[in-house]
Image 1 (tube, helix red, strand yellow):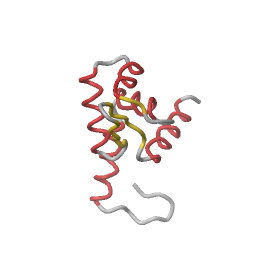
Image 2 (cartoon, helix red, strand yellow):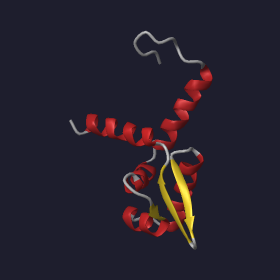
Image 3 (cartoon, rainbow, N blue to C red):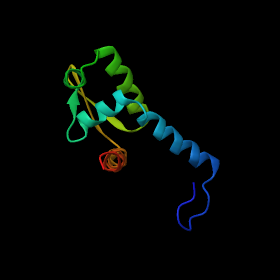
Length: 101
């Protein structure tokens, strides 16, 4: 993966890039990211917005949080999830622009 005049990336960088694409390569995770991209939402709000089960949403929220894409904030009994990695949202916007052409 060489861009312009940049030298080839070392294997560990390529692994990190592949891991980021892997975590974003699941439609449910993209639905979740789309839901929280403008402002944080509670788990219940995300479940309602995605039409999935709480168990399924929780599994994907955990993966997105562990990957550094989302951040988790607790407020009493409720947990809110918001975007931590704005670049992940930008990447999705770029891909969307290409797909919608």
